[in-house]
Picture 1 (spheres, rainbow, N blue to C red):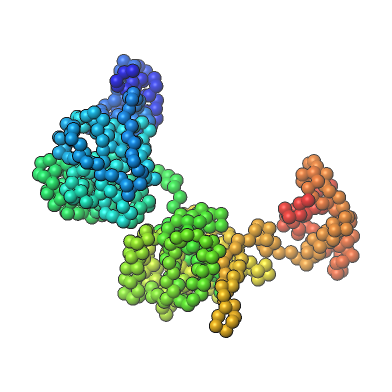
Picture 2 (tube, rainbow, N blue to C red; picture 1 turned 180 degrees about the horizontal axis):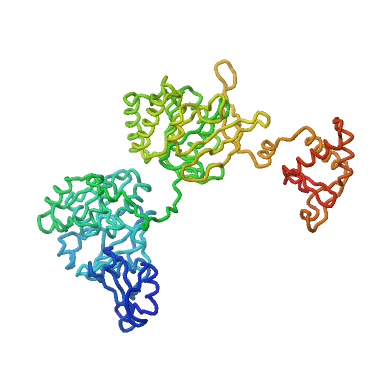
Length: 634
């Protein structure tokens, strides 16, 4: 076996050209050259490939770093990976971060370790090669980084770099940890902090922000700070992580360079000079040019199709439509990570500001918990008044509450304000000044917590829109209307506005009453939880029959009960053979005539049958009628 990769042009060129969207710029078939941005440094139109003696020749006129380029190409699956025989295999004693052991410095130091002046921590030696275990977010070893004496770094084949990282020291669930680009820099930072603070190292600058974001989701109690390299990719990665970062004062240096040249005390002092990741933004970064625009395919929802992340939502309806029950039901499902009646949910901490106060909310919460019995549901209810009209009233206290909850329980995804009229604290819902003040304060909560805020509100007395000034609807991303059908004893939620997705979704539900106990007088104390209504019952509620249409349906069912008619045949124009009971039109008409009170019986019959045909309740073929709905299937 050869000791180097074999990038045959016939095997690899098409993959490379397709992966990097390369453009052919010169040469005939045997001397063609292709250009694109460099997969390593990103240099625009500086990277090129061409065929040389049957092989792929690669070059970048900006970085001229063959090894870094081919490492990136291996990661992207468009460059061959040399397979070593008898490869070193690390076998860790434990996969839990609590048990990642800090290994003692090895007595047989390699040239790489000596050159970097670091200790061998959480790594082993395979001859003179440093072998470092890499972990995934399930706390499993998924691969290794191998560093040769001259500093050449290699990874195992198939490793996904933005889903793997190394650990130096011991990670716990609620610690502060530094993040670096590589192993040597990470060890220098760890040593400078007396080996008391754990370090996570990403495999390059490009994956560092992704690792940080994944940690925030998986382990939100671990506070991350970035020990950045002072070069263009390093600074960009630190800022993209949106966390505080420390930067060496020497251009082009990393923290291991500072360690080697100035000592560990200089590293420790330098790490205390933290920068805010939001300082010095490039104003041009706010622009996305049309040629660079890419579709956003990842859904950004809390409840798919109903509530979006970091949006402003309003759920409104008349009294007795079940607004608070439905909103609390949504909040519970988000906090529990439970699909909301068939719709996917993204889990997150939820705070419910029950501004109307009272025990009713706590009783509803108890019923929900008893019904679903999920464990560790991160839904907190605050059953007391709140003033969101005056920004100097309760807003500072709520921000403190948000910070305290987030620090202890993780990122908040939803805050509910129930109801707007109580939170407006005597303000005028119809006045633009008061309503825009409420919107501004809700936005302040939303921005501070980086979460969605949903407001429970009332409908206007004579309209089917939310009560109050139109500025509320204009500012709302998601609007959900609740109605109550008195005849069907059924409630309906309908998405009447969705800023980024198609609106019009409907959800029909009932409130199921549950007895929680008795009060001091011996009377039962009850509350309710939301129960979805099946499609047949929804259809019954939506379809309204005239008096004579009801009579035709009644006549058909009576004749059916008396076995007048037969099972349908199969063939063109019929349902599946034997699946429906069909009655001849003459029999149905005669029975109708015997019951109808109208003077013109023929006209009443024709109108009733035509109405049922248009509503899709009955169907007709070859002089026979049958009932269409699924529940009438034989």
